[in-house]
Image 1 (cartoon, rainbow, N blue to C red):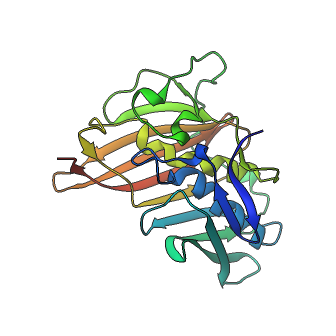
Image 2: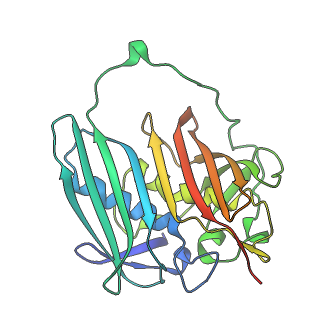
Length: 255
């Protein structure tokens, strides 16, 4: 089976062509790298706590080259723990992430909130997102829209046949997060051939652990009047909502 990354040493990974970016084929798309960082964080943590928030700050160009990931504990604790991960390419920091891990207890008796499920993807035709975006990552996806997308609005299921790391077992969460950054590309407000609107961060909040191979993205994109934008997404798996994702955008014309 093909993959987005290959393990080449302790904490070191080589991206494959399937990780290629949408804005520049010589760059990595952030989405699989976000999943890889999530995997590294989970490997660092003891078994038991649930990752409930992961925030990624994208510090610079993500060249399609070998990357190295370091993780350390910032705030240790038995019930609440904060860890930080740094991804480096060619010795330069390109992503800094922080994650809160919270202890798990049985709160079934008081669980509540919106439980509306998205229609399942089985009977939905695949949408070739390559009609909108280039790049190896976009070409690697199975995208199934619940309705035709509109400028700034789309709801889709996303999955991939590729492993995150060749020959390595990863959690359902890492595989799920590896698809979340796709949200900024499914509901474009303006053609990416005329405008740039890359995200400089991604923050994921989860109220339960996602399961299965499908990532559901119920996404709204807003552009402000002074060059900033926000992509907001309700995250789903087949059982219903699992949390939220937010991305801040830098919006500017290409010419």
